[in-house]
Length: 421
Image (tube, rainbow, N blue to C red; front, side, top):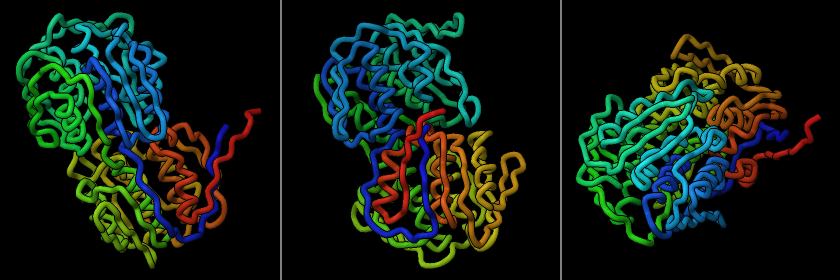
């Protein structure tokens, strides 16, 4: 068992480079299936989800290698069109491989993805998009069996701006004949990044990052290189940490334009944010104040993934903050663990009221999901004493060497690998 041991009560100071975006690199790795050649993907974070995606590519017959933040994928040879249950379960968003496999192979068999710690993630929108493009979709014994001798461009009207359904629609459309129009599409920066990668492949894409995306299917170029955008949620985590613990840090490799919803809330808390080119200086000299009501929503609203880490900072604010969670029904699973550290939080359905306390205290806590685990690290940095966070597998899905990053910012953080008894 591995634990993250953090000794809190120390202001943060220093400079780190923000990792590449997890939610961008995974769809891009899936998109390499469309190419009959080599892709070089740079600024890839070293995450368990990334390695799971690479293993899926290898299972399908691709040659894929991760080295020093770069993934090289040779997809000239695709020998399979299925993803077994074990690989599907390793990565929550593995259903995004459905569209590109179907477009490349004309068929795809995936085990039915289940829910996750945050609640069910229904894939009805993904399947309906495949049907709109001409695929036949059947379910047999927990497997999704999809077939399409040839996908054809169509109009896909999404009832909600689902990121995953937008990704799958774009990837399937890239290999379809004709033009596909996706309306009410997700507008997240990671969708824009995927559109840029597809454009580099030679696929005509317009509107990625807006509510209407147009994709004209075509043949991909045999070689391309792409650099993944910075991870705005990782950046939000480190800004929340300095907001809670105090200090003066510089984040390199950030795009503040993609983070307006988050930086607006953190600025209201008293954090001084000074962008300078691709860097962001973050200073906190006093106890934070509440940012007001925080309501999560699709981009450009406040991201649900940043809600737990902001809540951890609000736990030591001078006053009360209301959170309204509109995306995931179980997004407050980290709250009981924060309560163990002395936080004052009341949850009623999708609303959480956080009454800031003067200080938190260290405790043994458990990461219940990816962003909830990061929230515990933020709280630990501001707490008195030592906190031990277990179940690090959740954090490893989305944060690259978090202990090293916190240490380089002056925090006392250590990953300890213990033998299970």
